Image (cartoon, rainbow over all chains, first blue to last red):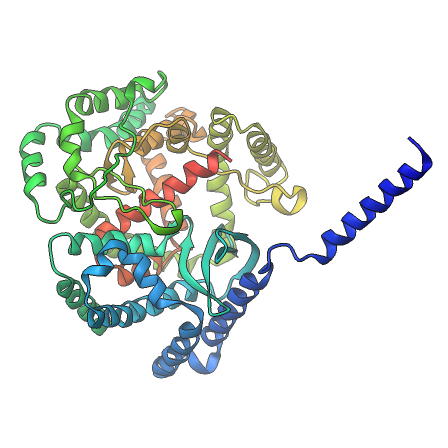
Length: 204
Length: 306
């Protein structure tokens, strides 16, 4: 091998390395994780706020969480993915009502679950691209006697990464609700599912 | 002698529910088929989770339970399980499908679900609340470590059975280190000192690791949601539990039951509110729990293959 060839090889390696550094890997590296983390932190701030702790401030606390959740979750995506092929059985009005009812149910459910971890350390460990427009953001709650993995699945909608599923210890939220809704939708019309949800939301 | 009773107790706990429901199977089935709450073939393409292949199970310590299960399940399961598998939906974007489980003994499981529910609200929760108020948290953490340390040998064995040698080795070192330096496992000193975390593994997972399916859903009293496979797993894991090998002169059945209860209460003291929250957010808690169980165990089996 001549000296010239060797120099060229070195040059090429240098160029290749340089290219690796300047070309962004996947376009969204880091963004989904930061987005989810920012939103979870906001929810935790509300839940940890001593002024909002007392029972009397429950309504205010709920409203604040609702406002954050609105930007954090993609509720129409969540609804579609939960109902899958049943979705088309709903009329546009029914779909709208379903999204709203499901939203209230999920907000309470999520706030309840994350509330249990407000005093614990939550680490955001990594993100894994699933498809071009979806990714999984992984977090771990460190507790005194164990650790709980919470994964957020996000989708890119209008330039914003929004959550369409939360997977706690391997249990996907939308899969879990799907199995429950299916039992109703198999034999009954969409209206009866809406009725069940109305009752549930009213009680909470 | 008493030690044998302990084994029988464990095995009976697993086998009883199966045998109880072995008799009225055909009738119960007819009911299941016509019952409106169980999904008839609502979605077009239905696959079935792997059938329970009992012939594949190697002969091992929990043989009695397997034999009984085989006697019952072996007969003519496939045709009647058709109706009890809830339909599976293919999801867009190639996401993973919902794991399913057969529930041919749903009436029994629902009854057991309610028993466990009442046990929690009427007994376990009040006892635990008093306990939490009396025993400060640092002590409870210490107890939790000690109880958990006793399960460590089982984790070593199961990691070995799953051929995860690194995990088995780590868990072994962790067990020795925590037992010696952590004074009988009172402290989990291996985590900060050696950077070794707990390497979870259980026998139900081991069976799953080798492709053995759940069989069917089974709600066990005290233990909660399980399946034929995982019930066998619980029984087998008892054989890897050190206290099972202490002679009955030193550890009476009563004392062993006391330890079990103490472990349960101590463990629950860290989880008060979780079951309540789960129930609050569910539309149908029975189905929600069954589905959560299947998803949770599926994840464990997948993790064991990494």
